[in-house]
Length: 449
Image 1 (cartoon, rainbow, N blue to C red):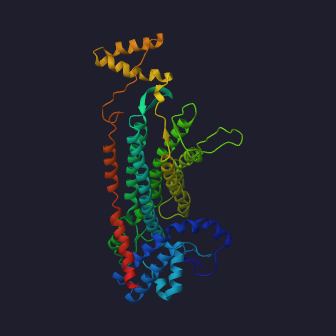
Image 2 (cartoon, one colour; image 1 turned 180 degrees about the vertical axis):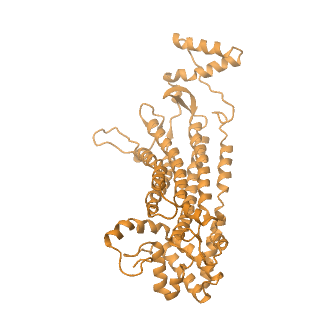
Image 3 (cartoon, one colour; image 1 turned 120 degrees about the horizontal axis):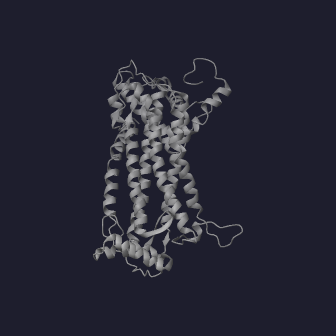
């Protein structure tokens, strides 16, 4: 029997089709669902809608269920529609009639909304920490190889000198922008929709400020209709943040595939981090980076999937929205996996330190030669023409030194300033305040136990 059924059973085919993967996806939300119920029932008690004699066993048993979730013992039973139903069924089985009272003033619509936001803000925090690890490693590699030159390209043609310091540092700074997008997504997630019920509020005297405070949200979603409209929009904003991270990782992966190619030979990895061929004994394939590139390119299409799922829906809840979990939740895991593998691979990278000694890179120093002539007093256009003619006539003999001093160049990477940008963004999340709120919810229940 479903929570919404009055009598009789739902058609089995309809049940199977409409529930789909919801039970599997809802396991991700179990911890958040319990926290939301802890806050909601305390608010009901304050509003006089739940007696102390009911609040105590509810809080005590919710804490037990929370521990079961943490221990991997929580399951959504056959015939139980979703995580909200499972938690309520467990409470009713274990403590009796009090378990049936926890849904007052709520709809499954705002219950799943608050679950999603609690879950997503936790996943964003985990992503943030994963990105910080990759960022720190990229900066470390940038400093380590700051003076090791490599070719820079435009139009995939050899262009000007670059350095491994610039290459690693560029991806570190790219992550600062990605972190800004993640912070924006976090701020959207960290607003409380609880109390909007089915999207039109409730005649119960709910204290939404209280649940906002107890759950550690920055603020509530004030307008109850907009709170429901936020379903889909929140997921789209999170998916855009994921797509930005994936774009950076995809490009980093593509560079690694290219630079590991024997025609480049700029970098290498231990044999155990590459794969071989069934027919060519010399092969050392960059499969990790290729698979990462493919996965991240798929993630870059995620915002379009979310948009198409939600673009023509009328106001109010629509069942289509449950499908968002199936595309978004696995994507978060994929991005986290890719961040972790990028760190694992780059911890074992070896860079070649004599690349630009080869004659094939003579012309890469042409701009440096032109600039030295200009510094000695020759007009730029004349210096440009002279060096061009020397190259055409085979008379160009470059001086293989590079002197770049301006901010962000080979000789002045500004890694410390980039690190400050990242730290400023990370400090804006305010994870500690959320941790304190969630810990206080659990401690309150512990006090009852």
